[in-house]
Image (cartoon, rainbow, N blue to C red; front, side):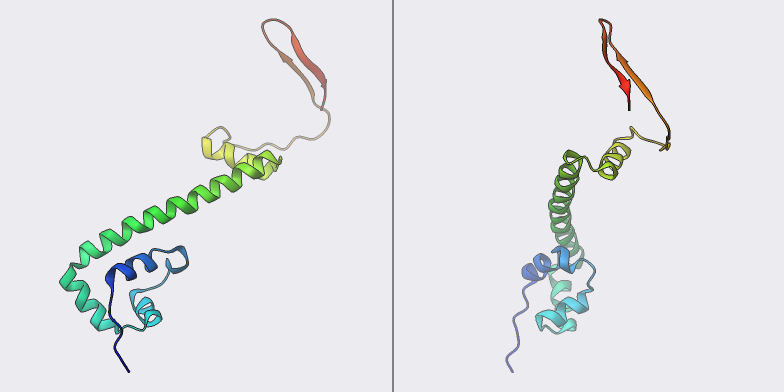
Length: 122
């Protein structure tokens, strides 16, 4: 059986993908069909710290992509009136520090300097 060529650039890129975030180096080597000890030797020659620093940069980049997706989904839920999403967004901004449940009738009057904007029961 022919030995598979070890490509540290490929390893960094694949290992930084969200589906592989929880995997160990050994697990990644097994998936790629590479000998774990050979990969460690190649990493030592390349510079183990350098390898992990570069991989961490890719992780941060991919994390930002995931974060953008999360915020987009949260925004869509807010637009649809999802109260849990609204609550979460307010907490994230620091505008909501405690939640108080009210029951019964509440009368609301919004007043500006000029006039009463609305008055009624909610």
